[in-house]
Image (cartoon, rainbow, N blue to C red; front, side):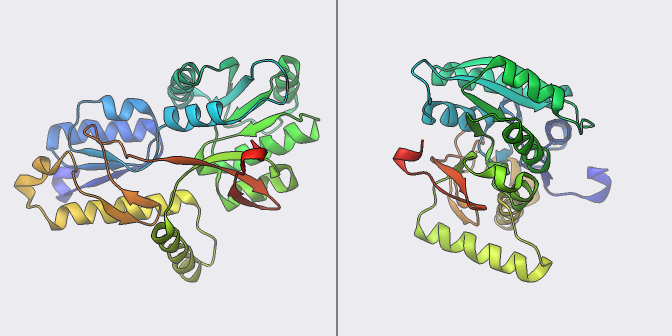
Length: 284
């Protein structure tokens, strides 16, 4: 299909299975891929004409686990809630590696079925484990619903999740229970903040809804791919990688290492009164 349609580039979604399929196609056709998938395995496929826009699960997990202090005198202990199936296995492997790097302990990793709507038994299991914090590594809506269920059941520990939970959908699904929820975010300089706000304004005017981080990263993926295609003919496209330039994006500056991973610095954001704001040192 890629060859029949004359595709010159691919944007792979956050879903790991779809991204790996796109990379298999890219390996046979030399069509460049810009990925929105956070799985660490994406950059280990051996496809050199690939770039990843988003931070990896390992980067985000390590940053959260190392940066969040425990409310108790003992070492922090975390439970992680992840999707089921292949997606969950990828996230579990990456979070275990993140915990090892952060010198933290994951007491348990629980897979959550996408069809699960009643979280009562799951929440009871989490409370029985008595963790100091819970990583909710799910998409924004189920993450928000589960956050609400945990708070309503009386869990008072730390709650945190991936950067994609920095989303109006998460805040709407979790309602007041979002208060105190922590996510990682790419550090933006003043020009970067201005570009992100400009993107949000344009998105709101065009679609009538608020943009989330994933929308900004998807926009950046398209701009990066167009930038590459405009500056290279079809025969020389594979030779354009690894990318050695930096491109200003709506989600921050786009620069990459030799494996195609985006080079970033992270900060913590915390939900306060229905929006995410920068964490102050005393809030950790």
